[in-house]
Image (cartoon, rainbow, N blue to C red; front, side, top):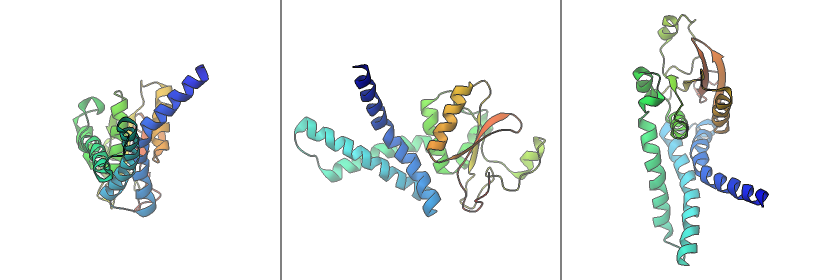
Length: 213
């Protein structure tokens, strides 16, 4: 009985998180493998996520009404739902999720795919803190660090920075491990390191600097 309950719960959680996974992981996949423009990758992820929502909606429409709904209308509604979810996270970061106002302003300089990955986790984890995003070479000197020539915090050929730093201090090691695991599952690169402070460095591959970090 307990095993069956756990299996059912696991299945429901999987079905709930699958649209989010396809939205973000699909966008990362299109960016890495097809070098699509930033918003093209996002649009592809939206279509993937909407396809799953379409099947969910069509299934329940048939279960509840006994007949299939209008395919075009149902898929259009699915796309609209995903778009409504994406828009706030792509252009807005709560002050509670940013170290300071500067970090909050830098958020929109990040690649949209990376923004979407961060904002989705921020939606689930209110303790998530962005400490740094876009940088200039001189910023490293002001922090007492050597200038990095291949930093993905710099603006890339895509027009966006491809790296963000997240706070790990006083966040708990289990939680930090789960956050790193989330980003890796979504296809991002992660690195736990000490610069000016212990933090988790999360990056999206840059086609103009394949070896950048």
